[in-house]
Image (cartoon, rainbow, N blue to C red; front, side, top):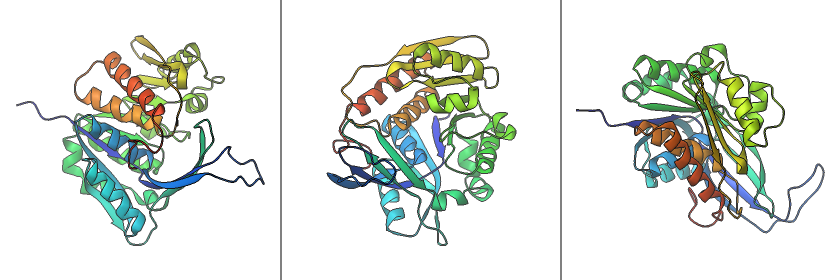
Length: 298
């Protein structure tokens, strides 16, 4: 019997506070806001929820504190059908959190405080060893230590699974981690950091960045916001998918929606073209959905 596909997300969980106002403040400026509300967040948590929403078996490996923020996050994982058996409670740390400030156009800026996410490491990989040995696709991000990502990626690759990393926030990846990556997904800013290209604002610019990164990584996906998505791999295959025009309600979480759906579709056996098309569509749908209506963890 063919094993059931599993997406495992090893990464961050944040208690998000979303603040809404007419604009984001400049340095030294105070802006009067309209409203605020708490949200489920962290790139890892968001990606796990997005993957689980497709119906695929999804597990989360992470860490929260034994506090109200941590209990909120765990409750949301339960409600969203994400297996959180290996979400550890750390009694010595605070739960990771962020504050995101949205302007009237739906764009935002955010500050994160990593807290318990920075405690992830070898001990979590060992505890989840059986799960990682059965994982079809492991999803990583840059909101936890590089060494933790390396340990998890080694475990999955040794068992025959694939490793997808969303290299966000932008930082230089260690050589140890680079060698374990099957698929890397970056946005314009991250592509500029890793590929050394100019601002990626068009599909052609995204494809140029993907080509450069394909000299380092087997498969590369570069997202260019509303312009669309570009893909390139070691074998010279290239895919361009145009952006879907929607009325922007909020861009918050669109990248995580894309990653979660992409991982789920690939784990289910879809082609890269089909998986990218579905992920692109679902991310656009999220961008067109108001923060207060049917979004993750609200």
